[in-house]
Amino acid sequence: MENDIGLNNPIPDLVTGDFDSAEPRCLKYYQTHGAKIIHTPDQDETDFNKCVRHVYAELTSREMKVNAIIAVCENTGRLDHILSNLNTLQQARDIIGEIPLYLLTHNSISWVLHPGRHRIHVDERVVNHHCGLIPLGQPAYVTSSGLKWDMDCLKLEFGGLISTSNMFTDQPIVKLETDRPVLFTMTLPQWK
Image (cartoon, rainbow, N blue to C red; front, side, top):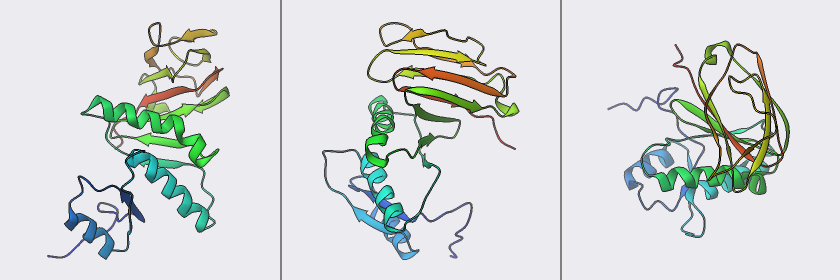
């Protein structure tokens, strides 16, 4: 059987984790095809945190500059894993500095908006698609323009109001301002 490596079957540069649920044959396959395998048995951090650290170390050692890091994952199933992924997004700035970390799933993309002003350029294909702003760890005051339900210094907090199921309008740019970190999440269209 021939191995078809390419766009539909990409080989990562790096595979890292404690490998407690990895099949040895899969690790060998990736290693045989050029992936660097790094076993990180430390249980004091999640595999995602450790992966972000190693990706940053690889970028630094190769003297590579990137605009962002995109982590491809699936946020279905266990709620504790989903929350852990969001926690890694929150911790990313301490690990990788100012490089944005995006969490991409089959139908959404999420990232942290740190305190300050932000402009999100809206592709016409996401008009009327859902988005949300969720405070991380503490209440946040958020102001927005360009969303279906804009906010004017609105306090978002767990146990109070969080902005889920908001929507993009036909505005080409969404403007957001926050005084604390918030998770921004949006559904993606089915690309054709």
